[in-house]
Structures are given as C-alpha cells and as structure tokens.
Length: 492
Ligand code: HEC
Ligand code: HEC
Ligand code: HEC
Ligand code: HEC
Ligand code: HEC
Image (cartoon, rainbow, N blue to C red; front, side, top):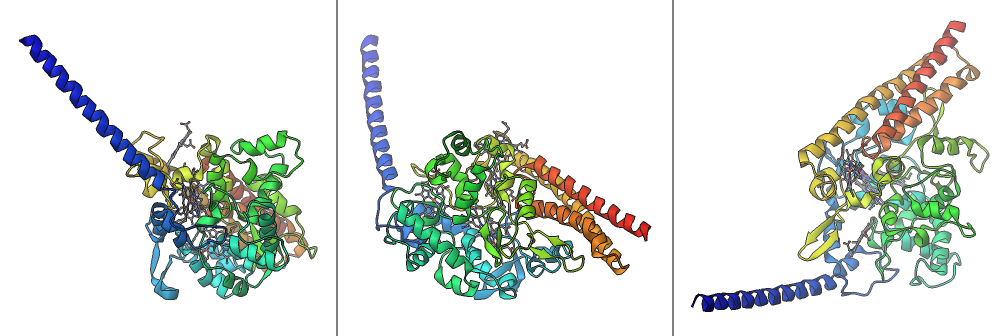
C-alpha cells in the first residue's frame, strides 16, 4: 500500500514537472519571439532617414527613452536645472547661467563670447534649440561648423557634398566610398557658411542615423571632426591602452590611415560615438573645425598642438585676446572623452555608454537606455552592476571626488584671477608689452588648465587624479605669473 502511494506520488511529481517544463518552454518561446520583434521593420529605413520618429516606429523602446532627454533633474555637481526667470524661445525655460553663478568666469573670459552667455548644459533633446538661442550666436557672428555637434548633420553634409559634385546617390551606404566622399566634401562647405544660413539645412538634434547604420543598426561614427581627429591621434606616439584598435593599427603596416568604422571594437564604439562631440575642439571662422590630438589626448599635449599651430593667415593660435591683460588665450570646451581617457574606468574598459546608457530590461528584452543623462540619477543600472555597495555609498564616493575637485578648482580660479589683476595693475603702472610677455604666457597656461577642468562636465569624476594634477599646475603657473609681475615692479 505504502509502495503504491509512493508510485502515485512519483507519477504526480513527474507529471507536474513535465507540465512545468512545457510551460517554461512555451514561455521562453514567446519571450524569444518578443525579443525577435525588436528588429521587426515596420517602416523601411535608409541613409536619408534622419527623423528619429521614423526610427521610433521600428524601435519604439529606444525611441521612448531617447525622447526622455527633455527631462531636467539636478545632482550636486551636475544634471540640469532650469532658470525659473529666464524664458527662451517657444516658452522653453533656459538653464541656469554659470557666469552669473560664478562671476570669476567673466573675469577669466573677459573679451570672449563665453563672458556674455554660458549656461548649464542639459539633455540631447535641447542641443539645437539651445545653440540657436544662446547670446554667443545671437550677439556674435558664428559659422555653420557649430552644427557639427548640435544637430543631425549626416544627411545635410552629404547633400551639400553631392551638390558640389561628389558622386553617388544619397541612399548609398555612408561607409561605402561614395557615401564617405559626399560627407567629407560637404562638411567644410556647411561649416564655412554663416550660422544663420547653415542652420536651415538641419532639423533634428543628434539622431539615430548619426550613431547607427540604418540597415544593420551597427554603431558607427559619422562626424568628420572625430574621423580626422582619430587619424591624427593614431599617427601620434601617445599610448592609448584604452583604445586597443589604435594600438593594433600602430603595429601594422600603416598603409591605410586608421579608420574607427573599420578597426574599432564594439566596446570602443560605445565611447567613440560620444567622442564625436564631447571633446575639446577649435571651431570659429579662422580655420576649419579640428580636434587637437596630433600629439595625444592629455591636456598639455593638446596645448602643445595649439602652441605650434599657425592659422592660415600666419598668426599664432589663440581663441581670443584677453580684454584687460592683452594675453592671447585659449578656451577649452567639454573634454569629457580626453579626461575619461586618463582615468581608471577607461583603463578598465568601461565605456561612456556603460554608465550613461546602461542596459535596462523591458519584459524579455534588454535595451540600452537612450535617456542619456547623469548616471547619479540611475545608480542601480549605471554603477551597481559592477560595484556592490549601496546606492548611498556610491554617491558618497562620487561626491567626495567632486567636492575635492571643486575646492581645488576654486583655489585655481582665484589664482588665475589674482594674476589677471596683477597684470592689469602692471599695465596701469606703465609696464611694456615686452615686460608683460612672460606673465601673459603664464596666464595663458594657467587659464587653459583651470578651464580644462571647469569645462569638463564630471567635476573630476572621469579621472580624479588627472584633474587634480592639471589644477595643481594651474595654481603653480598663476603664482609664477604673479611672481614675475612682482619682480617687474621691484625693477621699476
Ligand atoms: C564609470 C562611469 C562613467 C563613465 C565610463 C563615463 N562617465 Fe560621464 N559621468 C559619470 C559621473 C558619475 C558623472 C557625474 C554626474 C553628476 O555629477 O551628476 C558624469 C558626468 C558626465 C557629464 C555631465 C553630466 C551632467 O549631468 O552634468 C557628461 C556630459 C559626461 N559625463 C559624458 C561622458 C562621456 C562622453 C564619457 C565617455 C568618454 C563618459 N562620460 C564616461 C560617470 C561616467
Ligand atoms: C565638437 C563638438 C561641438 C562643437 C563644434 C560645438 N559644440 Fe556646443 N556643445 C557641445 C557639447 C558636447 C555641449 C555640452 C557640454 C557642455 O555644455 O559643456 C555643448 C554645449 C553648448 C551649449 C549649451 C551650454 C552653454 O555653453 O551655454 C551652447 C549654447 C553651445 N554648445 C553653443 C555652441 C556654439 C555657438 C558653437 C559654435 C561656436 C558650438 N556650440 C560648437 C559640443 C560642441
Ligand atoms: C552630435 C553631438 C553629440 C553626441 C554624438 C553626443 N552628445 Fe551628449 N551632448 C551634446 C550636446 C550639444 C549637449 C548639451 C545640450 C544642451 O545643453 O542643449 C549634450 C549633453 C549631454 C549630457 C548632459 C545631460 C544633462 O542632463 O546635463 C550627457 C550626460 C551627455 N551629453 C552624454 C553623452 C553620451 C554618453 C554620448 C554617447 C552615447 C553623447 N552624449 C553623444 C552633444 C552630443
Ligand atoms: C549618441 C549615439 C546614439 C544615438 C543618437 C542613438 N543610439 Fe541607439 N545605441 C547607441 C549605443 C551606444 C548602443 C549600444 C550598442 C551596443 O552596445 O552594441 C545603442 C543601441 C541601440 C539598439 C540595439 C538594442 C539596444 O537597445 O541595445 C537599438 C535598436 C537602438 N540603439 C536604436 C536607436 C534609435 C531608434 C535611436 C534614435 C531614436 C538611437 N538608437 C539613437 C547609441 C546611440
Ligand atoms: C563595467 C563595470 C563598471 C561600471 C559600470 C562602473 N565601474 Fe567604477 N570601477 C570599475 C573598475 C574596474 C574600477 C577600477 C578599480 C577596480 O578594479 O576595482 C572602478 C573604480 C571606481 C572607483 C574608484 C576610482 C579611483 O579613481 O580609484 C569609483 C569611485 C567608481 N569606480 C565609481 C563608479 C560609479 C559612480 C559608477 C557609475 C556611475 C561606476 N563606477 C561604474 C568598474 C565599473
């Protein structure tokens, strides 16, 4: 009897298990079908599809998160913040003004457009809107090159290139010979136009097509500035262990220039797509847009490129002449890629997208969060996949790095403003240009370094020690400059 019950139980267990397995298989099958649907093409996409809404019909999940870059949320040193009193075009509020928050910046940039208007940056959805309405564009003449990083320009460049005689159709693959020729021919044409003309050629902020192939969806880079910049970087001797495809190219026969679209790994592309724009650059009317990477990605290597550079008209490189001291100075913009390159995360193979576009699960589907933003607003997905500390602890560690960087940067800013005041005083006392050469040179070096860390948007997080090193040098150069001025005064 007991034996019989045992058999019965066993049979029941086996039956239940079988049903369970069947259910599981069915579940997996539906999930798999769901996952396959991710790539189901509702509308055909090609190389002319620069409207993200079109792509959204095929990839609604990524499109939904992409659209959320309109959100604004503050973090201690980042995120974004609307100014309740500054209402811009179409009733959209502007972000807070960084030069009103810290007037030392106006002193440092005196005579340059950044001293007129410089605001907190925000999500990708605003990039074209914010550029059109900044006083740097409204009150100073600018060129079409500004659009390189503020709009979906891939199709616009190709159209301009074809109009100027580049062969092939607009629907030819971008990475084929005709597509690239169109792009590279159109880029300088659009860039040289007055901003007000060039802006009529574009409609959207950075779009799917700028980072993805419309057929295979593979990541790609489409920005001529980065394509040229990486060619120059690869040809330099600066070690870049975090970009193994460049190291590999250097060991090869070098018959063809380095080409990220051919050579880079998927993981490298997860950073290079961002390096299309989040980099230091020259962009104004005296020469074509370029990234100063011919000697490497470190602050002083880029400075050395500028120091050796001559504009086509023969004058030495400067972004502007400082209004009160007369120094020829350099303004740095958002060197996120360069600073990240010096940090432990890059060295460990952690890409921009790992922190800023982490995977998220929707049903059975794992998608990349296209809501690009501060990772501190998404610590569980952005950091806790690798770091097994509590969310609070992770934020504390980031804040510790950022607060220290901020304190050091404050000292460096004070030092630069101190030097500027000293040179002004020396000028009033009758110092000659010859006597002021050395102090002005030191102002250029000190300001470039403070600016480097100030313009970088992670407040030191992307490479804490490197940020501190650069700020330490800034303080040293500024104080050396003050000493030089003091020696002058003694001689008088
Ligand atoms: C290990 C994670 C990590 C990686 C990798 C990383 N970042 Fe960041 N990034 C951060 C953190 C943390 C901050 C600080 C955010 C804050 O203060 O709110 C930040 C800040 C930023 C900001 C300013 C965001 C804001 O809200 O103000 C930008 C822009 C940025 N990073 C771009 C990049 C780019 C481009 C790369 C690759 C070249 C990159 N990051 C790589 C973690 C990362
Ligand atoms: C190489 C890419 C690149 C080029 C070229 C470029 N920008 Fe930007 N711009 C960015 C990035 C990245 C940000 C966001 C990070 C930041 O604000 O530091 C930004 C932010 C801005 C902002 C918002 C924050 C602020 O500064 O008030 C404005 C306005 C702006 N750019 C205007 C311009 C103008 C005008 C030009 C042409 C002179 C230009 N940009 C050229 C990449 C670029
Ligand atoms: C076509 C140029 C371009 C590309 C490509 C690009 N960005 Fe940006 N990014 C910008 C500009 C411009 C802004 C500032 C927009 C504004 O303030 O109106 C910005 C803003 C940001 C911000 C600030 C958001 C906030 O809330 O303050 C982050 C973070 C960021 N980008 C990260 C990335 C990452 C990561 C990538 C690569 C996956 C990337 N970006 C690719 C141009 C670009
Ligand atoms: C600034 C660059 C950038 C832009 C713009 C962009 N993506 Fe992506 N996208 C990425 C990155 C990085 C990944 C991760 C790819 C990988 O790891 O292979 C990705 C992945 C994807 C994937 C693969 C599945 C996934 O989620 O990982 C799809 C589909 C996709 N993106 C659709 C879109 C669509 C649709 C748009 C426009 C609405 C868009 N992307 C705009 C950078 C971008
Ligand atoms: C893909 C994995 C990965 C992700 C995602 C990641 N990290 Fe890291 N992180 C590392 C590695 C690897 C190191 C190097 C130290 C080590 O090997 O443990 C590191 C180091 C650090 C350090 C020490 C930095 C230093 O200079 O010594 C901090 C702080 C940190 N991470 C914070 C963060 C934060 C905040 C995020 C999310 C915004 C994040 N990490 C996302 C892998 C990651």
